[in-house]
Image 1 (cartoon, helix red, strand yellow):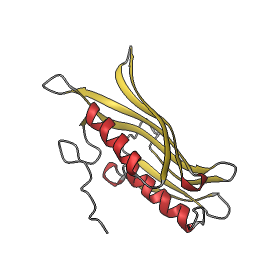
Image 2 (tube, rainbow, N blue to C red):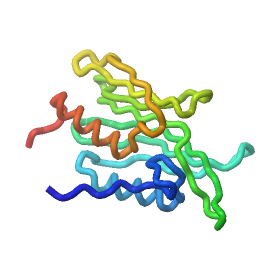
Image 3 (cartoon, rainbow, N blue to C red):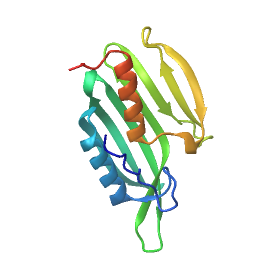
Length: 165
């Protein structure tokens, strides 16, 4: 078994810290291209400029093995470093793993404007597809998108959604 690569960290060493826009795009694209569970990345990363300022958004679906779809909706805060380069950090998150026609498997979110660092993990029952638990998490406990994909892959395997070829 090959050794696991160190996960990329922001300049401050946090997994959810500030990161340059180009570095973020490269990490996102290369991680999804290499992941064996990911079939197709249909997410769009866009810069948004309006009267409120500048932000970035990652939105769309990641199609995975076993007919699993991970819906991604992520809004980023933006700052400019001393060199004038934009850096981003996730502000609002929602990752929902589901099987169309059946139900949700897992969801992570923090869609509470008044508590941006209050994240939740929603787990759904493998037989009823109804929510079975909600766990509160801090920012440092929130998994990265690639960690969410890993968790969903394991849950899909446990639920018999993946071919055992």
